[in-house]
Image (cartoon, rainbow, N blue to C red; front, side, top):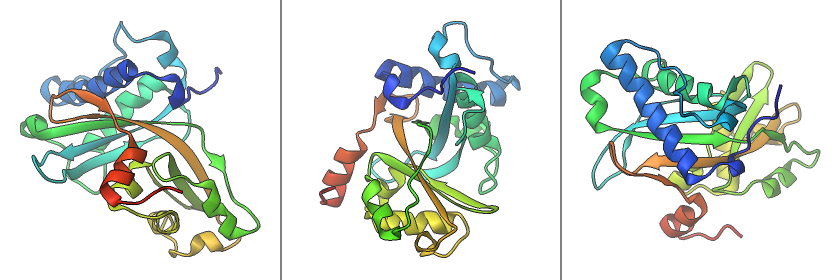
Length: 224
């Protein structure tokens, strides 16, 4: 198997391609009941293994959009192109928190694709030193203990203006554990980098989000 693609290898043009692909996959399923195949113009490197999350939101002009679905892959079990299609379909139709997306919603949906790096285990004997390994705006987190596992994408702490400790605690809660679980031995903490591409509005231009800049501007905080 070839090496998993790292988000740093991608360009804005790649991100535009992936976001438009995610939207098209949902459209084809809703309109024609067709499961989209990788298009003929897919760059060859996107057939390498990749990890991706698709986030779908209901657009609110002038305000915060509302989550409509978010599903993805934390392991490189599919090629990047296949993972994008599958995560888009699961976000639209398989997120258990929401009813399946319906056709009439398409003009009001915004698609966002986050390409992930391979997770790195940052668990340390000195549990507080874990906090020094994490950068808001760069990293997503995974918390795992036995059958309990949860992740939060890099955009989440930016959108809620969390500091690092809050971010780790909220990821513990996402995993179904106590918020201080990261202090306890036997709990594994992983970080991964994410690159985020997003429609600015439904069917609008696709941009790459600068999460570090967003955090500083929106939250009035420095990362250091």
